[in-house]
Amino acid sequence: MEQGSEEGVLKALRTALAGGGFRLTQQRLSIYKALESSGSHPSCEDLFRKLRTSMPSLSMDTVYRTVGTLEQSGMIRKIVSMDGVQRYDANLSNHHHFVCERCFGVWDIDWEAFDLFPLPEDLSALGTMRTCQVEFKGICLKCGSLGSGSWG
Amino acid sequence: MEQGSEEGVLKALRTALAGGGFRLTQQRLSIYKALESSGSHPSCEDLFRKLRTSMPSLSMDTVYRTVGTLEQSGMIRKIVSMDGVQRYDANLSNHHHFVCERCFGVWDIDWEAFDLFPLPEDLSALGTMRTCQVEFKGICLKCGSLGSGSWG
DNA sequence: CTATTTGCAAATGGTTTGCGTTAGC
DNA sequence: GCTAACGCAAACCATTTGCAAATAG
Image 1: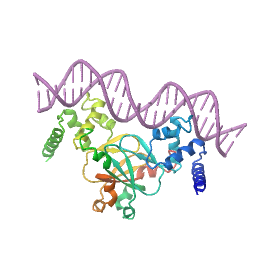
Image 2 (image 1 turned 180 degrees about the vertical axis):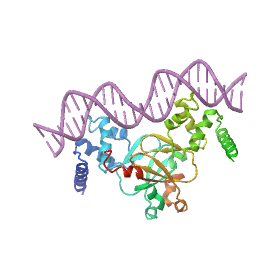
Image 3 (image 1 turned 90 degrees about the vertical axis):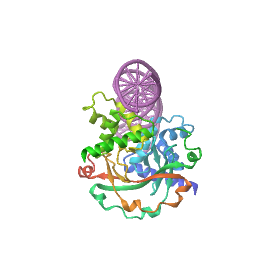
């Protein structure tokens, strides 16, 4: 099972990359795996810090270039977070996000009822819709329990 | 009517600023008015370029500081757009956004049916929700009509 | 009159790019 | 072997910050 899924990842990644004319490299594989296995939504620096122990020669700009390549290949999705740092998500299934306005953490939310909900009609007047996600903003449990005025 | 609404803006702005311990200045008023009268969602540079003709001494960092102040005062809302540039919105009514993935333009969408829709239950497990907006992504009409492969 | 705000200019920090070397196909 | 990708370092650009002068209350 583990080896099976390992193979699956490799194959899917190779196919997706080839579709964009990209090659499969060790760095791309590692970065994608790190993203996929991460429960959170890591930034480039998060990925870099996580991987540099096992890949000492890895450079920051390769991480930046690679997430761009993976995004173009449709393997990951960019999340624009509130702190101005780009974060990435290898979970391509339809889901939504809760963003903490204090610590800028991002959590996934599944909401099937919404996914079945009919979309507004006047969208076609603006263009062609591709994705549709709900962004909840507020204060996460941890930040909320710290008291409302503690950081500013 | 025009003068009436002018007064209203001034008063509302003064009150909102005072609530945060801020003073009302010429720059803050001009920047807020520019934001309010803009149909789109201007960035700091957009605002700067628009205002510098009438306020030659205005500086870029004042625009940056002012949008932060206005946001803290609850008069405007920050939009994190896809191109990494912060954009602002003086429309505080509940509305949603359509973002073009090619030109990064942002359009407002009113969707009352969604606003009445019951929210997912498991939100409370994450924290306290404050706002909830739907982000539609896709290709706008103008970009779509330019042909799919023209820019890469 | 006093504290805040502005404008200037320099610093910051995340992200991008040019180029010689390395590695995938 | 040819071309794409990597690593390095420098560039880039939106945003932030320190400080002296100006201004709101």
